Image 1 (cartoon, helix red, strand yellow):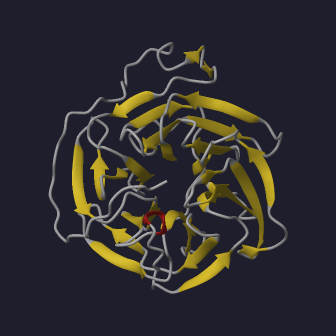
Image 2 (cartoon, one colour):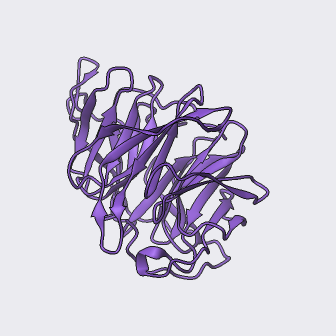
Length: 321
């Protein structure tokens, strides 16, 4: 769901501090939706940053526990007291993933995209340092890269939600098709034993748009697709399933962009739980790391530009970097 004008990338770094609504570290248990240490779902999302962006999507914590957000066609650093620093301008606001000791991988549609009627394979995956230095890791070959998932061997998957393609890329830029198992794939999450890849399907078709609500599981063996993909959960009509995250219990959190909701799917029981509502344009989500709340999800909005905190009482599964 990236229906906005692209701008050309530029190669300089500058900083901007804006007024932001900050997640209250001294909030009461009642304000956070807690009751004697237990969380009663659904919880009320808490604005963390409001007013910094018109819209934002990608979100990730690097290995140092520093928070990065893709917003207004740029990559930003956010600290835990609400200061927002613009690092580098790019073409779009798409998925982020930590890589290495400090850096971030960022998916970027490039100058053209299929959502605007220009299906050209000019997508980019950038590697960006906390100082804003950029390297094109993937330069073409993918049409509209959206979400990035780093694998145990430090290769990474890139979904193209304008097609039915998920690619596997290496840090040297080599690229191969990984699977066409899911149409219009978006968010991805990998089980701890690397036996199952979860994939959110955003659309049934685009131009004209028909939204989708499904979460798929793709069985893997030796790092490759093996067996038939399966729909394991549906979030409801017109959900537009978007970003995914996983907790230490193996439960999958799903951003339902058009519904403005966060759902949780438990593979062990099959339960689908409404975690939070009232998040219009909920796009990507990431568990807090470092000095941020590690038992909460940080959620972006493609519609309002707000970054919310959603307390869930669980920590995020370890991420490969």
